[in-house]
Length: 603
Image (tube, rainbow, N blue to C red):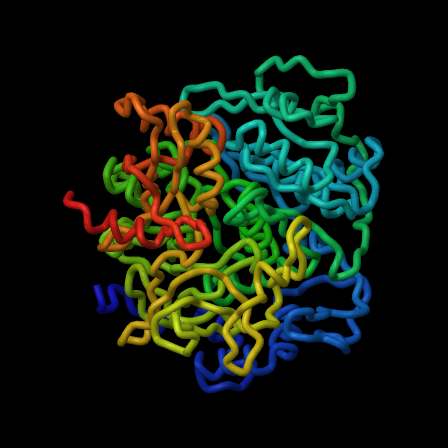
């Protein structure tokens, strides 16, 4: 599909946040606004922070400090702030969070949310948590997770994001890397008619102390553990702890291609990028209800908090399984106007027809990120709400948002992007190191939101070393992008050994390490196959087996290990047994050759 399925009306254009900003700057159109945003980055990010109403206890001396370099920018030097304060600027009586528990929908106002976050901050102080200490959150995206997140940040501590789906050793790895000793969790997870352990996983992971939300699981707490009801302070007044702009607010994790996941700190100004993308590209207004089925363990969890609350909107969260009819009814009943998702979720809705009986007419727009989209699935999604646009959005944890997206000022062609995100610039470089209309994407720093350090890896080596020389400093990201003849962009998958499975980035080495725990496997190579028509990547494993091994049950055993030790959402599409893996002269597995081989195999 190369033609627009949706084009903005005069009413949509007039009401857009972008239109107001363009007019306020006295510029002619979006192209002029984008040009200004990346040629005068200091001017753009200063303007955007003011437009968003970012609260600073002490004003900055400048937007970009003296001594700034592309790789080492100094944002808002001299300022003192706590980014959580900017989440409470809406009127206290306005609904901040609309949340569903066991089929019932509840509202929490901005005033109530602030008081609950204050109770968390005071509770942390009673537990001896000091400024700069790391506190993990390992639980579903529920109201307790949201107030815990904001309370930790208000207290000047640092959130450590851990997905509730992680296996025990993955939890232990993230606790070890971050240096967190305390975690907020819940006893069990009730999902899809099943009761799944949560607190027990943290105990097995060696977490020193847990604050446990009780949901009826009757967990037997250890001596140092604290029940949520006892942890919450009765004092609902708390003065936010002011921090330097570069101080950590959140530690998130993104898969590396080998070894431990990359530990990526977000600072107290990283969420300005998050809120900016929501304001300009997703057109989030105070009147919106924003939903995105996600988790604080992935960047879209914090993204949802800051994108909704900094923009004074209402965020909507549900305990229903996103693929089922309970969630699609929640979207209708809670009045969602901006709905985010991963493309594999749309495929599931389309296959199960879960959303077709719902009235989604209140939805203004969708957003899609995490993996490549299928144009037919996206066209189906648009029709569910009466042909509403999709803002395709691509980026990463280490960007605190996206590098490319759409806007409501541009026509929507499903499964494509219309523009680099505001405040930055991108370059496509071919295999020979030359600028091209199709190739590996590189980001041109500085841009607010780009990570400045990694806790456990060499930041320069990961993102800057060996980048092409085109006369500018470039930053590696790892995606392949094509600029189409119609001026839109299309994602073509990854250039490295990372893959996106169900919107979650994972390294091939992590998959292979787990697979090799199966008796009888000698070698394994995991690859992601991008369907020819577009859509979510499929996980394929090439393996070499020991002589005499029964191959009939291998795929099932490997799948069970991947689900139990990595993530229950990861699904294998195929297993290929070969005599040997193709390798370079330096013994590196040639995964590109394996992809070529697989695509050439008869169906």
